[in-house]
Image 1 (cartoon, helix red, strand yellow):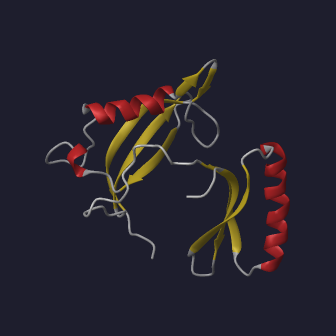
Image 2: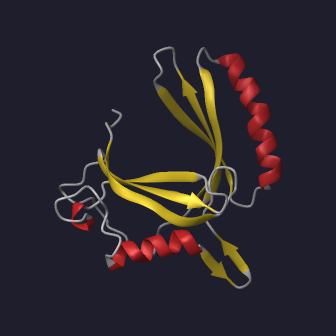
Amino acid sequence: MGAPHVFVSYTVEDAKGEKSSFNINFPDSVDIAVLKNFARSTAEMIDDLIKGRITGIGVGLAIDTAGLSLKQTANADADVEEGARFSWRTVLNTLTSFRLPTFDETFLVSGTRNVDTANAAVTTFVGRILAGQTVGLTNVSPSDDRGEDVSALEAASESFTRSRG
C-alpha cells in the first residue's frame, strides 16, 4: 500500500448492469468540503466522456497499515464469497448493514447460520461499532448513510455472495 491519501471513487455501470470503479487520489491534507465539490463537478465532465452511467461517487481515506499486526497473507481457505452480514438498528429505528467477506465460520453458532454474538472477539467488534472510538473529546461513531448513529445490533448471520472476476 502507498502513502496515506484521500481518494474520490466513481462507480460506472454498463448496459449489462456490470459495475466498475476507479479512484482519483489526493494528498491526505486535502479540504474535504472542496473535495466534495470537485467530485460532483468532475462527475459531470466524466459523464460527457463515457457511454456508461455513473451510479456512485464516494470520498475515502487510505490508511497506512504498516506497523499494524495484521495477517501478511490470507488463510489458505479464505474465500470472499463466504461472509457474515451484520445488520444494525439506528437511533431513529432504521436499519443499516455491512458484510465482512471471508468471515471465519468458527465464529458461527454450531449448526446454524447465526454469528455467535456471545463470543469474546465478536462482542469486542460489536462494542466498537456501537460505541465508536473516542480520542480526547472527539468520538467517531458508525452511522447509516443518512448520518443516524448506530445504536443496536439487529442481526448477524452467514452471508454468501458471488465474487466478481
